[in-house]
Image (cartoon, rainbow, N blue to C red; front, side, top):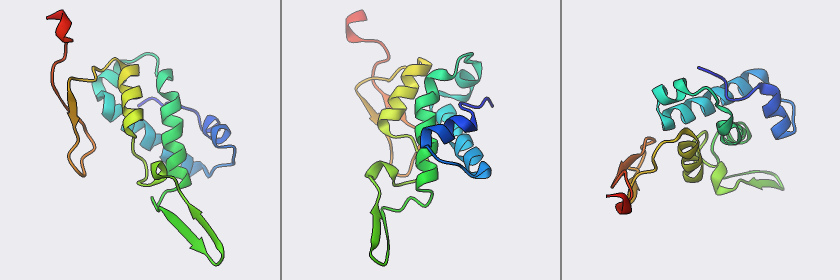
Length: 134
C-alpha cells in the first residue's frame, strides 16, 4: 500500500518532532481509512494520491494529538479541552469523507446516506444519476 505522505511532512504539518513509531502508525491509520472509504481496488489503481494529502495529514494529526480520544483532561490547576473533532481517535469526519470520495471520483450517491451507529462504512441510497439526465 502506498504512503500518502512522508513522515517529515507530518512533522512539518504538526510543527513538532515526532516519535517515529507513532508517526508511522498514524500514517498507516490515515491511509487505511482513506483506502477503505474509496475502495481498495480504486485506491490501488490510482496513479496520483496527492489529492488525499490534506485529509491524510489531518487524520494523522488528530490521532497523534489525542490518541485516547478524551474530551478533556485536568492535572491540578491545568486543564485542556479538545474540540469535538478531536474526540474519537482516528476517524474520517463527514467533511473528510466527502473530500476523499470526490478526489477519488466516487459518486456521493443520492438523497441521503445511512451510517448506522458504531459503523464506519457508509451505505448510500438513492439515484446514482441526476434526475435531469433521465
